Length: 320
Image (cartoon, rainbow, N blue to C red; front, side, top):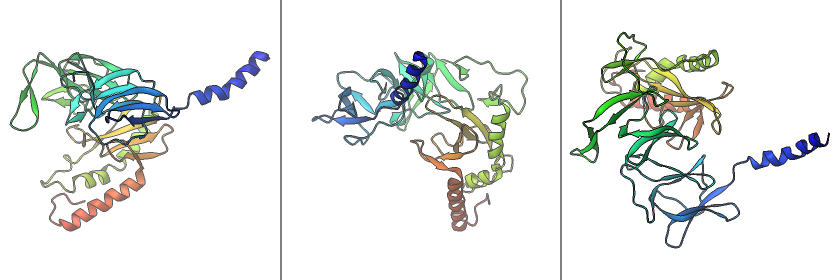
């Protein structure tokens, strides 16, 4: 009886301790950035030169702490940008450098760099695919292309291209996948070779996807209305896939949209959706910070935008 009473008394304490601690960025006199908790205790000393706009006292959002810049006294690793820590101040990894900043999340993971090799971490900061390859592309439709022995070559613009090396394709477990000898239109074309369709669903997940398939024609009309070249009905076909499932700190199914070639419509955030764990509430991801907007509100705004474009361009070849 005493043991049971003690357990009951401890429940409120345990519940409270699991609440996310409030953390804030702070700046030193020489404009270096660190992190403190709500009581002023320093979690991470001010030792980062941050390049993005950051106010003194700005809240740390999300499951990890991100310093968008260099660490004083530490040489930047090649092809890496910034530093990721957990909320207790433990260093986790350096994100891969992409488009003058840290790599974006794609299908629930983003690239990291360690000792010149590329791997993947999830939104909780956990390394889910160890850094073992010289280069890896972002995941698209459940697969990522990698190479070993390849190198970066400057092009005429600000970007670089990858040349040479031995190339392969990995799945979301980091395993190398071989192309199919016999394939169907359900499989995935990657650089002219076909790989097995990676998505399998239970009944609940099929019902979630059905919500989007019912809106497919409407969403296709919205997306393709401003394309300058005439597209066939087959070319305007959309695919909806669940790329992330509910887990710790993320109580949603994420649904991404792909074109008829099974290429992501927009790598950053457009036409990506979240569905509550019970499958009843739908959101659109509204910006690269993954802010949520109720699906009905988002759809209304997108329809209005498409209608306005069509009125301003009555000769658009892809009428809604």
